[in-house]
Length: 312
Ligand SMILES: *[C@@H]1O[C@H](CO)[C@@H](O)[C@H](O)[C@H]1NC(C)=O
Ligand SMILES: *[C@@H]1O[C@H](CO)[C@@H](O)[C@H](O)[C@H]1NC(C)=O
Ligand SMILES: *[C@@H]1O[C@H](CO)[C@@H](O)[C@H](O)[C@H]1NC(C)=O
Ligand SMILES: *[C@@H]1O[C@H](CO)[C@@H](O)[C@H](O)[C@H]1NC(C)=O
Image 1 (cartoon, rainbow, N blue to C red):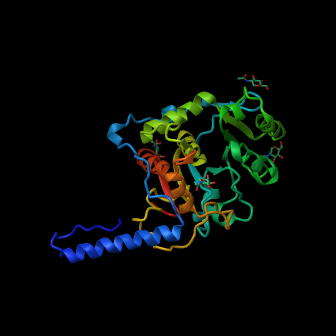
Image 2: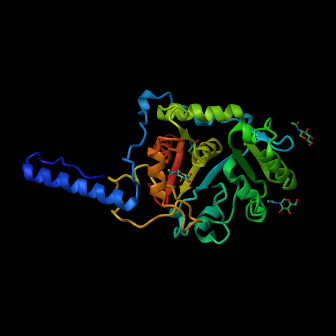
């Protein structure tokens, strides 16, 4: 993929100069059209597999990592087949709704709705993974997110233990607890502080970068993918682009049309702009969406993960 200057090694210098100018122009056009101002595409270094101590995520799993908000439920979900529906606008037009709804377990993220998008994303939800920052958006519309779930649905909330941890007893914690008591057939869990640290350690091992020192935030996608690997024997991911998708060397056409970051926010930010800006962000903390996908690509070979819309 991408442009190569290799070949029979007998191009004239003029050809080489021409090709170099062409590549430069392409880069300029791409950066211009993507509105990415201060960034060069620099995915973080991802350690190659032989330098890694690989983690067996199947063994890494354990119900101890999840703390119930109410009662003494434990996280025992296990599925043979899972559909992991991303929130990307790549799901739009996929017509995958029926196939998703036929899958044993359907996993969604944050406040991604089904109402009005059933044809493309289906209507069932077995598991939702929700970031602390999305809690209000989810509990504000219980009809959309809690009534429309499978019969024994699970919601996993992740976030800093001082915000949603059991010992925090903060507003957010009490809010989720109240919801959890009201909708008693929905099992609500938070990720235990010890497991949050394991998620950081996993990022470090898989990318070679310390999460905090590299000013990275883990994404809900990261938590969801790891959780899915823990509980599912097979995973089909809908709407996730491959790691090189937003690279200037990808097959994406220059000036290709804007793809909203979220399918339910058609006027929201563009996916590649969001990915590239976060990937290269150095001041403050940023999501490393592209780096995370490089890890997912490796996990896909190790666990039974396939990608649809786009297929890769
Ligand atoms: C969980 O709670 C129920 C009642 O709320 C009780 O009957 C059961 O024994 C408890 N299970 C454990 C493992 O503590
Ligand atoms: C929860 O249980 C009640 C009855 O106990 C039922 O009416 C409701 O549909 C259930 N909710 C879900 C999400 O399964
Ligand atoms: C990084 O991604 C988040 C979405 O998780 C977005 O809100 C934010 O604007 C992005 N940051 C940059 C610098 O693009
Ligand atoms: C992949 O799927 C097969 C068949 O469903 C299952 O037997 C196997 O355990 C799975 N492999 C992993 C690594 O989960």
